[in-house]
Length: 132
Image 1 (cartoon, rainbow, N blue to C red):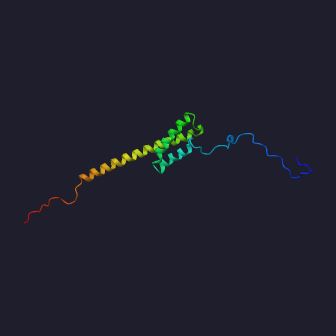
Image 2 (image 1 turned 180 degrees about the vertical axis):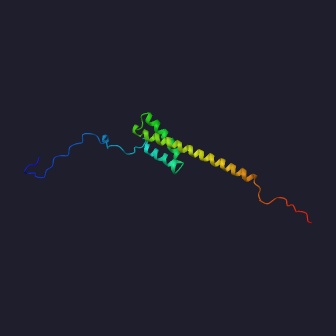
């Protein structure tokens, strides 16, 4: 490799054996088009605890992810998180519906009580006792 005449010579760079597109970087990152079970789980939890609109979103995304996984297009390791997020989304959606029903019934009861209530607490006719 090194000859006395060329003390600082280097060997040529070897050509790569595989193509650049076949490099495996280890995975673990989000890939577009794949179901992300952790996101669905987080949306389900947020839908039950903080932001109710996230619950139906988690339910729909969970259904889509389960269908993709069952058809072989999705990562099977995400099935558990997607399923749990989907179930939590269902519970959160049910809580939203129960809350809406409660508010409608409460408002209807309040309005019916307010309609039947007199506008003043004073008697409508005044009777004057006879004088002696």
